[in-house]
Length: 367
Image 1 (tube, helix red, strand yellow):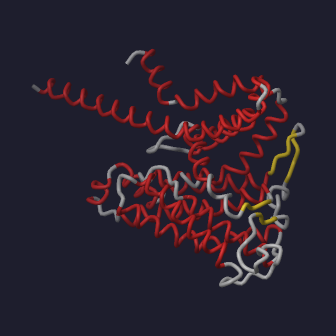
Image 2 (cartoon, one colour):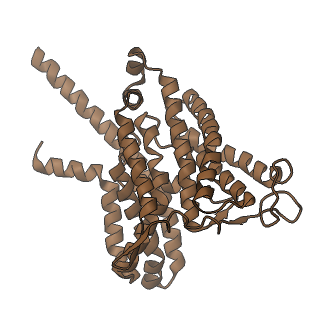
Image 3 (cartoon, one colour):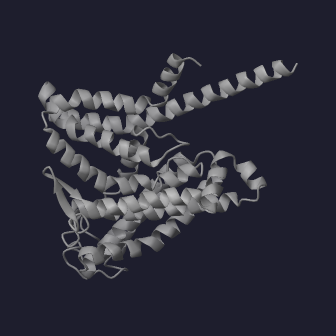
């Protein structure tokens, strides 16, 4: 393979990150934002979204693709936040308690989701996406009719005027930026939430360590070839379920960190797009359905959210309508997933073609 072919192959494998680099390079001058402002916003988005995106890595390792079912963990995290808001527990203890509450709910939902995905082998992504819609209905039933009627909720600030059901918006003032402000420093005027970044770093180190464990190696083997893994004595279905459970639990924690940064919980909508945007950001970082790493997470957060920041103002300065930028970034969120999946299939078929050619060449050499 010549240098030109190698370069073309590298560009083909990194088509989506390159495309977003071009979009951002074109949009930054049009937006008129200063470098300091953009850097500050990017640091906020990294601390807000990275934990959620890292939670997608384990199922990819196990060959289950992009876990759109992470929405189930996000719902569990929101239930934890609603309960600690009712109990009046604030600050870091409130965040920790919300995580503790979300954990058993996430484990149960993750186990159930994993069982279903084992029955839908080969169609895990679309199945997990539909499971998210189904569980959204159950979640809304619990929050809209169960809380206050079956599940005790004392705070009138949370309940609808009828006496049961949670209001559309829950004020998380008690835990707002509690972790972000715990160790906040300023570097060249840019606020850096060291405590939040430290938590994300610990998760990344855990992922790196986990890949080297027996269970991590089993997941890698299952992701490469389930039948070979089964023949090697690995409990394939059990291993796949564990990967989804871990991902769902981490998604619940990530949602709590995400909402403590924002300070407001949109009870019925906050979780709806979180899976889609997290998957899109990971794909923008150069990940695929079958391969992803921590580098993809942070590159994706930077490029994807940089586009989110600059697009409204760039649209306004370009044609006088900021709304165009809003439409553009929603369009890109869905479009990048489509493009990435298409490119993954193209690369898969191309690699199979190369393998076929190599086998044919080897057979000719033996003859």
